Structures are given as C-alpha cells and as structure tokens.
Image (cartoon, rainbow, N blue to C red; front, side):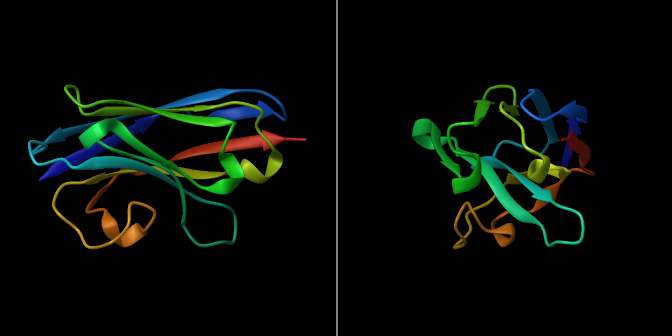
Length: 126
C-alpha cells in the first residue's frame, strides 16, 4: 500500500507563484511515476503534469506549459509542482498520485494511477 501526502497549497494573486510538494511512502519500490491532477470548482478532475521515472520523461497539459514545472526525485519518491504566472482559472483542488504498477493507460489519464493524496486547495485571486 502506498500513502500519498500533498502540501503547499494556498491563496495567491494572479501572476504569483506557488510550489506544491508531494511525498509517497509505503510500497513504492514499483513506482513507475507520479502525477498531478486538479479539480476546478464544479468540474471533473483533470490532468496537470506527470513524470515517468524512466528517462525522467515529463508530461503537461497544454494550459500549463511554460508556467508549471514538475520536479521529481525518484530516490525519495517525491514530486513538486512549481506553478508560476498563476491565473484565476488555475483555482482548484490539486491532487498528487502515484503509478505503482504497469498500466495500459496514458500518464495523462486518471485511470493510470492507483494511489491518491487527499488534495490541497489552490486559490488564485484576480
């Protein structure tokens, strides 16, 4: 079993920055990668960014490219999400997840992850 804990959310003005952190513990020796998702108010959970440990390949949704950076440490099973130039539409609950086994789903898919954190609120004011 894998435990996932996020931290670092908060309230920030548009144009500001926040850094989210995530740590996975427990049975992480088969961890293939980690990802960040978010649930905006009244919407479904959506993909934000992910990292595949092999070759440190990263993935981003188009709306955050050039503004967000995912930074992972495979040895520590941690992943941060540096968010710059934040916009009000980035307001959401942000979730971290681990991909602890082989999955046929893409890294951008919610179904590709098996352990999730409780989420951390990010609010961007205009």
